[in-house]
Length: 425
Figure 1 (tube, rainbow, N blue to C red):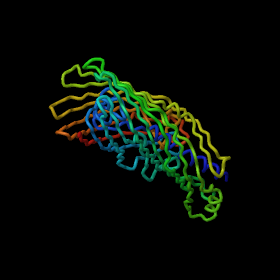
Figure 2 (spheres, rainbow, N blue to C red):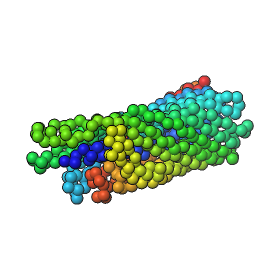
Figure 3 (cartoon, rainbow, N blue to C red):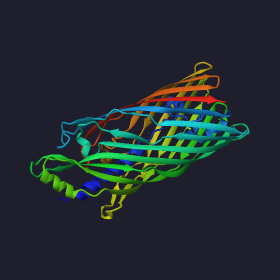
Figure 4 (tube, one colour):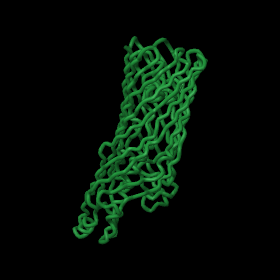
């Protein structure tokens, strides 16, 4: 059996694809006020989450403020096998329910009359694809868990009239990934496909530096124009691959499988995170309303190939094309000042996915998505409370019979609830 090379290559492909597909699943909800406006915030940027949305926006905030919160994310993903796929036909699958809670926290301190210093913490890449047993796609992926956290100190300046502001920040990102999948083989004594091993891959925390920069213009009292850029990063990860045999009950066959398993060993790879450029225009020409429209461009085309290197068996190094594409997202948001202390928010979003059909798999069955948001803001003295809800629908995504894993159709919906509490000193 030429089992060792096949198991090692497919398992490590799963590790790196899980990382890269996870980074393709960005988390744009990094502040409850912005999330209530569907993330259309680059030209508003008037709370401390501006460190993420448009770093120049902290210059217009002239009180020391702290803001902290999280987004609570619940996914529902279902799979229906393609009737023409001999392995997946007649099967279904779904995610094991998990509540994902990426946190965020910000603090800003004005300096003099024109400068503001701020520090932000957010998790803008990650999430998890964990499939319930029994799962036909377990030989592709059972569970992928990618986590990242970014720390950003930032400084912004505005001119004397407040009509021009610029800012920049230094980003320090840490990330890690774990993955579990099973391996199949045909038992020569029964002719049946059986589970013979589990590949568990876990990386250590890797880190890298990047930067962001933004500009905010107010050409008239009712018009605002903003732009913000997050630079790309390349995150180097070192991990361990553990191959655990699953007994089949046939001692002779188990001995053959055990002899073919690769040794546990280290793996290294570099994961490219994309650059993002957001541009927005906002108006307050309608009394008590702020309305904003944003476009965000993400350079997923940086993710062209996977290069994986093995510590002990360099002959098994893997170089696999991915061919992701750049994407655009479009966001429309509105904030209504209902009373002196209460704001009501609404928003719509359309977000393209970068994934070619050939890459759609249980690791990340991504698809174009549309969403609607609503939010509430409340202020009482120095206290700030913001909450929002997003209802996100992914268009059905079929593998169109070209997947190297399993073929079928994925259907996904997600609900995201964001909360922030703040205090102005």
